[in-house]
Image (cartoon, rainbow, N blue to C red; front, side, top):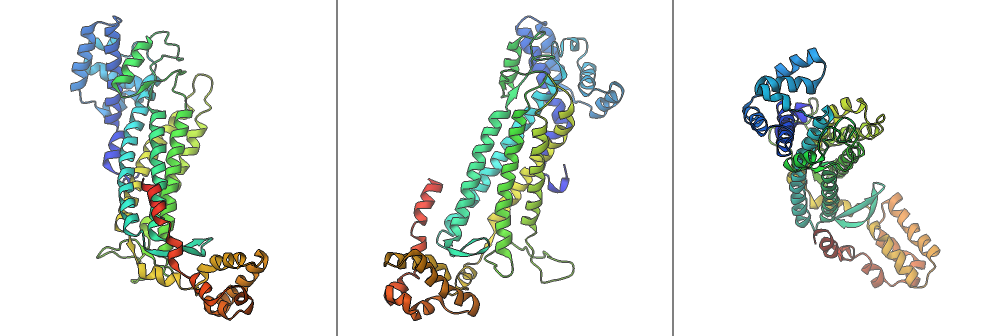
Length: 433
């Protein structure tokens, strides 16, 4: 986790103190369930809770023990015994280390996901507001980076809203996918622990019992989870790249907010660079990169090997912390984004009316001209605009073949911008319901 790209609310989930507290809760809930079943004395379970809840787990002490025993869970259990006393012998009955590690990991992922779901809610609120604000701000649509036909800036924002709404649905599904608990013993057979203990602990931690585990929870769940984060990161990048393109000097239809006192370049005082969205592009690359090792973790040997462990110690914190930061940054960018309608209009007119070429093409075909000839006539006049800076409508009006099929009135009508925005309300109703 890089402090520069981290928020405390998220990093706290992954701090050692938080992890050890979750480990304790897993062990203590399991002890309570075993006491209910008569496996261990109720008094022992009560003491484990009483002394453990009050305990401040000493991370340095646990690390010291681990340096000797070379096992993190044993180190924790040894330290817990120092805090609890004799009743600690009833802790971890019938469990294996992965029962604790995997259940804790999923608790952490669920808590991280809840933060990111809240992030998405904030982003969606901003995108909806900006979409409504610019619903009728006409600008040029581009395909291949080239002027295509008119749209509105609000449609750009509505498109982003719909994409992140899908992201929220996917993340909610990923949360459901990852919210499982396994306390099934050394190879998942419950040989030394009652399955009812697993169900009890799962309910206490807000999880559900894994239907079938080995020594670990199946890693296809985690692969899906981190793949989902990668897809959301790609959506972050898509909107960021759009902002970057719109901020280019030659376009300047929108721009990141440039605060008083901000400086864009150490060499060139005039610079106002899209640094936040460029940063988001880079962060998105990192989140996507975490998806591949998560997929490679699926194929463990037999009932379990340890190859996934080092991977998850990195990608768990890094992917969630980074995406959380990226979502918050993107929300701030879109909240303060400067939009320049006058530049949108100027760019719209830069190609002398070529954005209306399809309307003229269709009008010619409807007037009886073959599609091939219609395309030839429209393109012939369009190329004069590209090469010579002519006005498209003027050239069409002077073209005898075009005029043989369409009157001046009919041609002028095809250059009405309102034609292209007549269904904006329909699209907004679909998106925002």
